[in-house]
Amino acid sequence: MGPEVAGIDLHMHSTASDGALAPAELVAKCHANGVRWMALTDHDTLAGVAEARLAAEQRGMALLAGAELSTQWSGVGIHVVALLPNGEQQALAPSSSMALALDTLERAREERAERIALKLEKKGLANAYQRAREKAQGRAAVGRPHFAEALVDAGIVSDRAEAFKRYLGAGKTGDIKALWPALEQVVEWITGSGGVAVLAHPLRYGLTRRKRGLLMDAFVAAGGEAAELVSGFQNSDRGRDLARQLDERSLYASLGSDFHMTRGPFAPGRFSEPPSTQVPPIWQHPRLCDWFRRYSEG
Image 1 (spheres, rainbow, N blue to C red):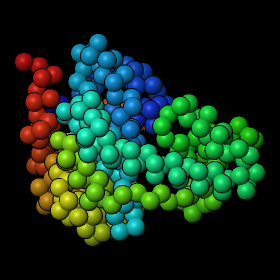
Image 2: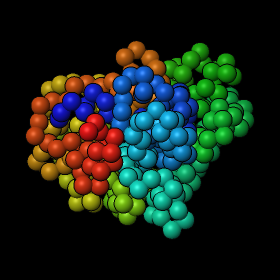
Image 3: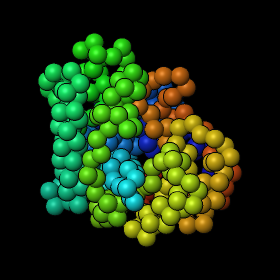
């Protein structure tokens, strides 16, 4: 995929959603790690992009506006990364389909948070929603990590891992499924905003190879054009198999760390080496190649 791989990361999170670093801090970390082309893709929000853009411009880095949008397909929660080459201001204009998407998703997240709070209050976490909102520090979306921190502070659990194991993980009391919009609707919102829809981390949904293929077929039929060939650290054999599935559907390949917080090997710009493949990298996409070239040497 070329030497650019060492300097690109198109999937990261900041404190605008559930990341550990403020947008400007994340940019500084990217710069220190040699990342030259980056996308900030917080969950269902563009709130951190303006701060990140200013920090990136000060360092001569290329920043692409983005968001990781929540959706569902065949009863499975699926994430789609929106890469928005026209920038956050145009995406947030009142008439933009992306503005409609973010508003819809914010309301879905708030409704889910309120339902989680009611469940946790029955387990002994008084004022659960208020506590989680305080942990969110004014961010638009209150999520399970914020409830986990509230449980720790209340002394109900010892750490976040225990909070998810006992209360917030799959099948537990606080595992409330939001009514996310359909995959087709989310892809339509992204493409209607001039963006590129990227199927996020296809290997993480617990799907069989056949069902993953059906998901990708539905994604392509809806107008999706790319998928993350590499997301963080993954098995090399599964990566090669995923490359074949992308190639069969003429999808572009995206790359990202899916960075949230510093622990172990996880860091911006750090992910498994992409498999050898003829699948074109996403920075060759007609709507993204100009952005990439502006920050390329020569």
